[in-house]
Length: 393
Image (cartoon, rainbow, N blue to C red; front, side, top):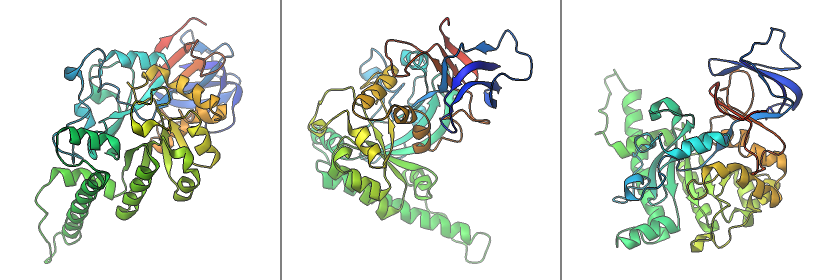
């Protein structure tokens, strides 16, 4: 299939004022100027001069986890029975038939990070998935696990204080994370010792299987990052301290007070997923919630993405979130990057999504005017080469 006569924002190279994209079996095969040499067919799509960009990416949500219209039965985000739960798998908690998937796709949000909440210091896995309709979550996966979810600050403190259990202080939250990481580090050393001496006279036994330590091995090996829930500046610095101590990659999620520590975050090389922006200041940690945080971080040279934290902000308002960040001073082009290629890079999925390049997934949004204009729906949404939403144009 070909989409032609489009203004293409590739998000990798310069914009193409009049170009086309060809895709086969869900992958982009050609991106070019003008029209393709091969004859066009009735199945190909004339974009009518509208703007084509990569599918939007929500870098942090709980899509399919906090379900629509349900209380306890449809809420599987937090297993609040043990503060250290790195082995919980997001793939086991998501309901792909939740109506919010359809709302996301129609709004052009083609790819999302989703998974556990922030009640536990170590909450479990996050994954990346597409939003096109499917009955089986396994068929939507882009990467699983994508990251491990840690949480600092008020959420774990409050959850366990209400249960009259540890942790009830920031010290204990950090200590629980540190203890589990030390155990996993020692576990990894035993595994590596076994593997290095395998089939030799000095071969050692594998350590007794431990599912929590096993879940942390990809993090300690550098295969995935930790996405760390932090609002306050002091919690952000605790996250950085832990990452340095155990030498793992990390991303700060929310970064509500990131705007007041921009130089420090730049110096540390920290990436931030900013949001939600459209929400109330519902707890003490959010007292400094502002719409200019993303702009300040970007101006300082910090790599940023934007998120809805669905259902805090419903996922179909990801572009409205970008619009508010623009109102707060973030350049328009950077706001688009924050929900496309920057989000993909921060989440380490830019080999698949985030830009219109040959070999990447055929995820597109065609829109008229400004991408963040909440009064207009996309004219066309394509996910994995399949049209999932189309308006007459």
